[in-house]
Length: 219
Image (cartoon, rainbow, N blue to C red; front, side):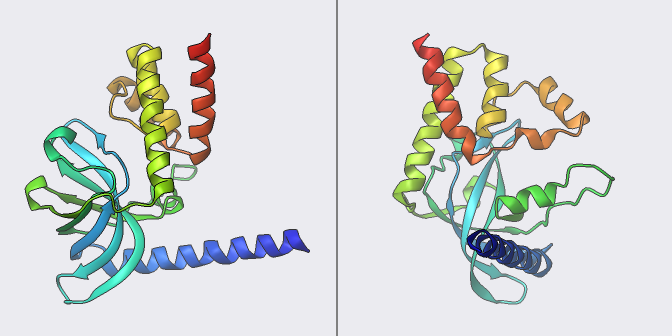
């Protein structure tokens, strides 16, 4: 009975998440919006931009004038390098952009990017420039999230200290979701093999990674 109740609760929760996600993508896709939210990642530096996950607190539709509180995340691409942009984990920011719903893989057996983002409660993506982002607060994050983020940074530092450059970049991408230093040829190989989703982060990977790195360091 207990297992059945837990299973039913999980199904209801997943259905609610699905419905909420669908409403958000339909309502805001291609719309001009203003977001007030919190930076919940350290920033994944790419060739010409840095990508952050933003936890949305409020969203304003610049076309209709409607403002509402929402609980979802967006991927935010900001032009420039991480050090130049200056955003930090826990920063509260306000910025305007155009909301883009994630694409859906239509090929049979292909990686469904929108479904993957849905599991991370990410409803879409936005783009901005650092000069268009207004900082309104700092350290606006709970203590558990700060501890998890500090652990991730410690793991990254150990990974790059222990392993050769290319291996460290791949390990960081596979286990910690940090693709900032992965070799471009390796990343392209994953993409061509339709395995890009393997470069995603699983929460359980963090504790496992830490244990392995500690053992390696001891050896």
